Length: 133
Image (tube, rainbow, N blue to C red; front, top):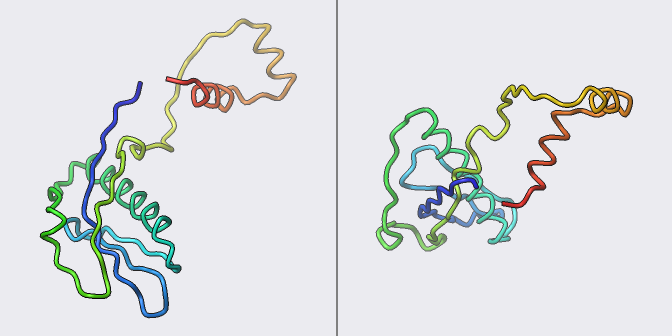
């Protein structure tokens, strides 16, 4: 079972004149995203993804980052609003990094897999992803 590392930070959704929102995390320098439409649920998804990617990078690289401020302590103008954005950071830790694994299978399985043109790495990855916890 994978461990959860859920974190939440306040985000400012600032409405843009041409439509959409600029979304920034005032407690985290350089963490922001945006959307071109007025679809708030989509903006929350984008904000959560940006937050997850950056927090995972900060943690993996040992970079210090601020704790989240209380939502009501975040100043914003009349064309914006503040909301908490949550993310399970564990989902973003080097998710695409490949790791070499050595395993043993019966020779007949290897031969059959080769005849079928199977990619054993892809097959194992798919099997693990489809296995429920």
